Amino acid sequence: MTDIILSGCFGKMGRAVTDCVNSRNDCQIVAGVDACSGNADYPVFKSFDEIDIKADAVIDFSHPSVLSGMLDYCRKNNIAAVIGTTGLTDGQKQLIENTSESIPVFFTANMSLGVNLISELAAKAAKVLGNDFDIEIVEAHHNQKIDAPSGTALMLAESVNNALDYEAEYEFDRHSKRAKRAKNEIGIHSVRGGTIVGEHEVIFAGLDEVIKISHSARSKSLFAVGAVNAAVFIAPKNAGMYSMKNLISEM
Image 1: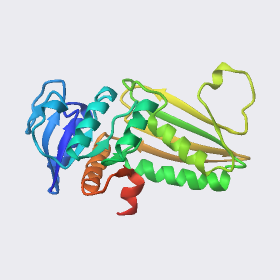
Image 2: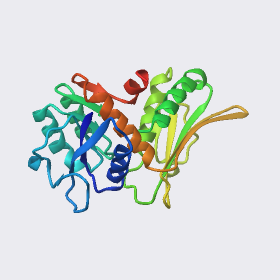
Image 3: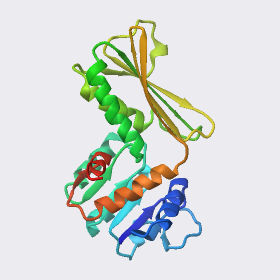
């Protein structure tokens, strides 16, 4: 049984994780952390400093401002960390990398198994098509999402870029200049509207043909499932950085 502390337990993703865990018999939530008030079937603390309950892993779907305290708590208590929070700075990502030297850390831009599979497919397509096809990435999310482009779009761009024979440059703002598309560009475009959960499309546009690889999330529950799977997977691991690729390889 994997004992989980859920950070951001009263948020939309936190509630989705709670529902997911309640449907399983291989894990349980033993505590939550949230600055807001709410009702839960487990004790909820305002901060990590207040927690007095042992656990095997922390799932964090809260806010970037919580990251440092959460990682410090996990490091001091030798607890695995699953990070699903988005909008992190480069400095915070470096902090995650440094912390993984002491404890197991599961960090990925998207907890969806499907998204990570299309990332692999896009990389394979780039190896075959990259020299002759223009590559564009389009992502769409709900109108409450703050960061743009999405971390997943950047993850897809990186996956594609690493597979190319050349170093591509990301173009986020093509409307601000009047010039033909450069060969080494990867265009990344953001759409915000309504209640779109998350849609990502990688477009390979060549001579007289277009190839599209896409993923559409219909609810937040699929991200919760991925995070819970990650917690169960990483809890017994040694210190290090883990991602969905590692989980998929052991499935």
